[in-house]
Image 1 (cartoon, rainbow, N blue to C red):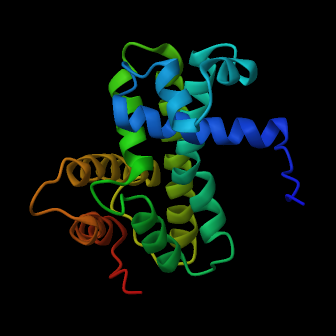
Image 2 (image 1 turned 135 degrees about the vertical axis):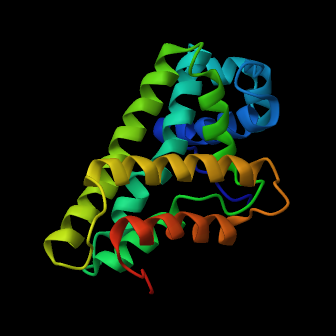
Length: 204
């Protein structure tokens, strides 16, 4: 007798569609992706996609939001059990960079950034992400300064904003395949600034 195939729940199917939409955005671009592209990536008909997401725009927003989680929620969880401010800062910096030119999450983020000026929702999503990332870094810097580990050369919020800006800039260079800037080089360049800004060697 043939094995019984268990049908996926509605929530599981939506998760699959979000992943399919992410792949479609990276492949075709946020401004050119169509319902048929998502359906092809998901191995479904366009009608099946619309059953779960009647509006393609809603699915694309959910796909972008899922990609953004890596740069805040996942990093916060990653450092939650760390107590050393140096380890927290170094781990956070490294975790915010692409793994390489084909990193799908960062390519998705770049697509979102490119469309932010034309799509208010994307702009709001990126602004919220930026503010949360700044707050994440600021918390680490405040803790390090309070413990006497860091001697900050500027206000914590200014250092935090610069760290996020450097992440964004070097992340883009990596995905643009700059021949001299890969993940390791980018991390070292950002930590070079962080060493100056914190008065700490950041050896970990």
